[in-house]
Length: 221
Image (cartoon, rainbow, N blue to C red; front, side, top):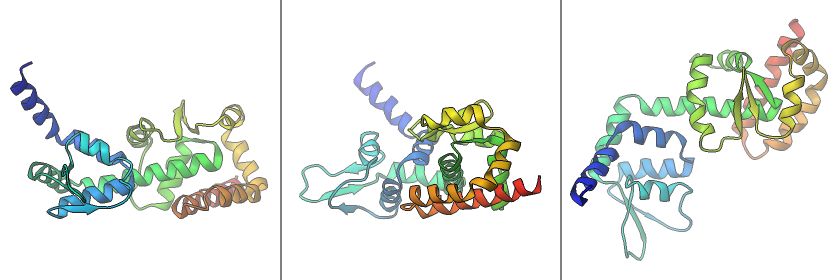
């Protein structure tokens, strides 16, 4: 392919909305904040350590870093601003928040239980949120986070934590027996959650809610 044709092809690929959308779902929060600021401002000046995924956005030309400047000047081109505006008008911001919430719930659930049935995960989420989800939607949303290193995966009808302990839960997990055991192990679970999620209040809160709901369900059986 000749240079002119290659440049044209790359530029066209850059402006495919779905490419940018999928990338923005999974970038870290600091880079996401930087991207939104670059969209709103003419340029921004950075200092100190750059966000984790900044170089990815830079290499893909979604953000531009001014070369040979004393300060780290970053900006977004007009074409990318138009592209992002199209995503916003199509409801992207709501989808990103919603998908990230499902991902957060998955993190909380697998860190608390090791393995959780997809049906239980959906039931817990729907009990706590006005917007309802489904197994089909969970199976469509969460793989994008798995592909970039989320510490969980799908295993048959379950979502499991990617640690050796999960192998034990695979053979022991049974919905009815699990709910019966939860009442006895509630204090242990709370201690685990307190130590593991002390640095993340969102995961901590979601995990406790999961625990309380399943304990109540176990008592109803």
